[in-house]
Length: 333
Ligand code: IPE
Ligand code: IPE
Ligand code: MG
Ligand code: MG
Ligand code: MG
Image (cartoon, rainbow, N blue to C red; front, top):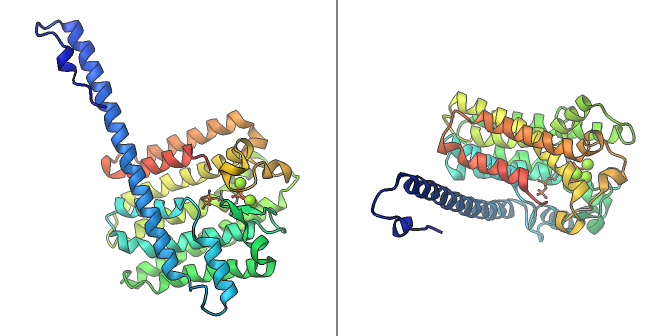
């Protein structure tokens, strides 16, 4: 709401009143600006989430393509849910580096596919044994363990296929760089490695350093890859910008899992769309169990500040990344 304070301001200038009125004006203007920015960010988010849904829909084989059950289960696992944070991060980082939106589509989709694969396997009885994901039955509950395993395998391959066949990425070196980043982030030195540490440590309290290593790998690596893939979608990304994005994504990637640990302890199943309290139930080491809730929240906000500091040199062109970081910190699921 914009208040026209001139109507209330006497014509004879009283410095005290004017100062007060100016402060009110500034506050009002700032609030208006903030509300506008929030609205614009929400519109951007909704727009790109829908765009990602379409890209994924177009690139996962239809449910009547043989083998139908596998394709149906792949579509079930990927489409119609998820916040698409990794894709949004790729788009924001790509725009920051001057990439065309269309050039970011497939690299962003590839990270979402790896992420969806990691969720399908993470929910299986041999891992976290969760029957709920994104507000519906987890893949193995709906299709059985064997299909869930294959869904993970096939989504992983599809992710690499999408980058390799991307016609908008004309430069083979650029593709190779992306494939390398995504492979590292998904494998034993990235997500899969972090998941292995997670499973090995059930019932064994980790040190803070070990916990950080686990989180950086199981979740941080893929978030970092999403941002880098976005940046590499630009044909001439500036080196300093790439460094800033990398620093930003490392910090916000770790913060993401700290917040996930907090939500697991504080939120309810319906809001989360996955079973709340799973970490405690499974005797997992998390930032909440190791540090306690309030220190975990403190750490999350320090990591957020660290991510913001990585962008401090930049002006409005980094606003989407800043807003995305805010979204990651304040999300409810
Ligand atoms: C959940 O990730 C799993 C973690 C790595 C913590 P998200 O919270 O991004 O899950 P979706 O994609 O929105 O469902
Ligand atoms: C999972 O961490 C990270 C992945 C690589 C999937 P969590 O096990 O905490 O994720 P949620 O809470 O089940 O989504
Ligand atoms: Mg897990
Ligand atoms: Mg889990
Ligand atoms: Mg969790």
